[in-house]
Amino acid sequence: MNTIIHVIEFIFGMSLFVNILLYIPQIATMIRANSAEGVSAMMFIGFLFIQFITVLHGIINHDAILAIGFVGAMIPTAIVVTLAVYYKRGAKRSMIIQTATSALQTDESN
Image 1 (cartoon, rainbow, N blue to C red):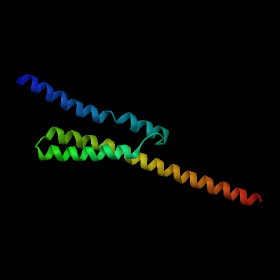
Image 2 (spheres, one colour; image 1 turned 60 degrees about the vertical axis):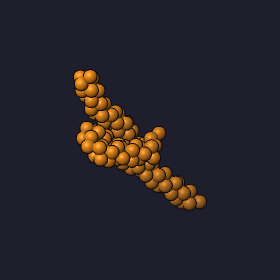
Image 3 (tube, rainbow, N blue to C red; image 1 turned 90 degrees about the vertical axis):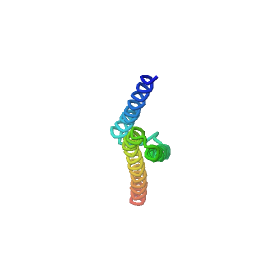
Image 4 (tube, helix red, strand yellow; image 1 turned 180 degrees about the vertical axis):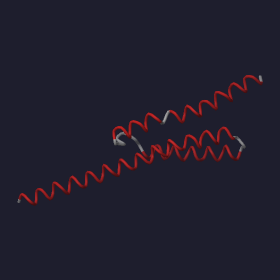
C-alpha cells in the first residue's frame, strides 16, 4: 500500500509540472501571431484565481507539492493574461488609429 501512495504522489507531482508545460504552446502562439484572437482573458483570469486559492489551500494544509506546483502554474497563466490584455489593447488602439486616419483622409479629400 505504501508503494502505491508513493507512485500516486510521484505522478501527482509530475502532473503539476506537465500542467505548467501545457501553457507554453498558447504563449508561443500568441507571441508568434502578435495577437490574442480567440483567447479569453477572463477565462485565464479565472484560472489564475483558482490557482491562487489552491496555493492558499496547499499552504494551509502544509502540502508543499501542491502549493509549489500551483505557484509554478500561476506564472505561465499570468503571462497568458498579460499577453491577452496587451494584444487586445493594441488591437483596439490600432482600430482607433485606423478609424482616425481614414476619417482624416476623407476630410482631406473633401
